[in-house]
Image (cartoon, rainbow, N blue to C red; front, top):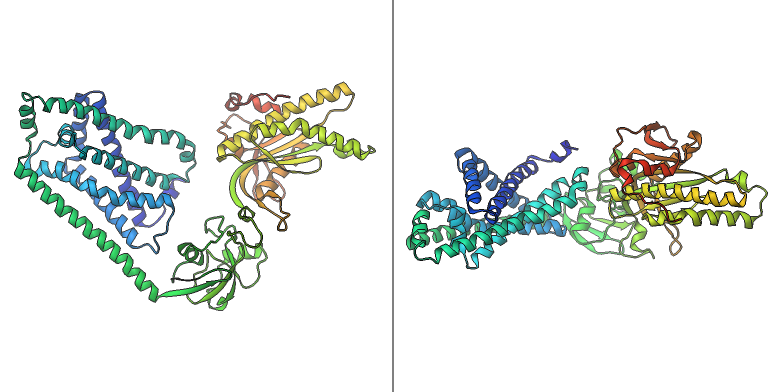
Length: 565
């Protein structure tokens, strides 16, 4: 996973590295200003340390090279985009990145440039009183927030697929709020302190001499440099727009026309995949896996132009064979039309073909629970149908509330068993809910068997398999008669795990994936590898003699509660 974080071309890696340098600087800058909330001396001491790092030739070179490269690569990326259509979060990051120089230029001129050229003592206190109490202080505070939010979004885009990042996100969000709040509190505190000093006619001259306060002529010179620097920035922004528009105009000469059956006719740049063409032109096009060629939901029937497309790759051919697609069916995320084509989208997210949007399915990583009653056939042999149904309903009445209270729902009843899914907000909470449900089902079964004892009936025995993985949730069946259900290899694996409980003589088998996502330390647990039919690789799981025994796991004991039965 660590190596995956650095995948991409040199431009992507350079943006990441330079962005990290700037984000680290912004973090310590916030902390430095925030020290003013505690003590002006503490703020000055930390500033001296930071100046020692960033105002020597090496530190300055690293910081300003990172700033220049990061800005240049950002403009290059915008100029090189095929379309300006993008997710809201990405658009926000781009917008904030373009706003930053509008304030940063003036800040750099009034601090580093003023210090280098006019020997102004640009300490934090000088900068704050320079802006206090005019609107400039709020603009500069706004710049700090813009820089911080821009950096946080970039950091999230980079690390969002890492499991540790997902686990730590709630805490990091809190830190992301507290850091700028701490800095802004320091600005207000130091601003009031310095204002009290500067309204004192006896103290003000001494401080102005200490700061080497700029003369009117010096300020005028700084304003001129600021205006010239802003002109350079607007010129670069204009050049970026010109390159983007120029590329669009050239692309139209190298464009291709795509006609959608029951849809619009669009013109797009050659070199894009058909799915990218749909997204760039606002054409609804289902793609559950995000265009990775795994789910096949973006597939299209090419009614005209199939012979002008490049042959499918082995991976695409394998995916199409798996769904028994017709010869003129292709995956929109894999083909790059260079000639006019007419296509029919097999799956439509716009409600046509009498299907709701959710009938297209949704891919999620969730925990599921497969439960079966042991010896049901032998137990009910010779009984009347009414007695069989009565027993099943009593059994389900006893255990299903435990599943529901834990946050799960029964996807389907399978005669003497059931399949439950824990569709919570994220994967870790789904895993915890499944473990909680399994333990509570075990306790509910004990109480149900006690009731059977009093009636002179034999105990009910069960087997449970709990697993976690990728699922597709959606309506499956004919239009208008399609119940919502789940499918995927995870369902088969959970079913096979449940089947192994009978051979082992245990009530429960819970996969290592569930325990890991739930935050359970498995180092001291006796996990075993199981070769399951239909599952390509051995599955590691924990056998539990009685499902209620899950409550004894140290990592779960604080979260488990007893069933109300």
